[in-house]
Length: 106
Image (cartoon, rainbow, N blue to C red; front, side):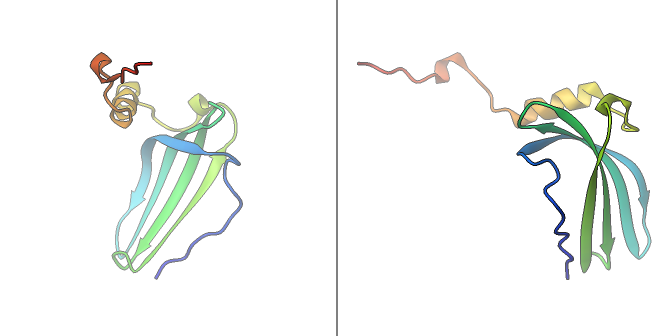
């Protein structure tokens, strides 16, 4: 079973999640997590988002809810490890080698 939350579009544009910081967890029969996320929007703005997820019965019922944290993302409660963020961004990008550039002849 799954409850699909059908709220309004969070950003109004495409976005990529760059970073996730686990803030709080509680595990018993119901697993709940609160995380802070850093998202890069299509217009190149950075946005901090709070995410609450719930998993009941080992995957029988799962739901998530996200909310934009207003203000500067750097002032959010997120602990941002810039080295880890740089590693994640590098992993998202394909390796680029000068020899991979296609040559076209007219």
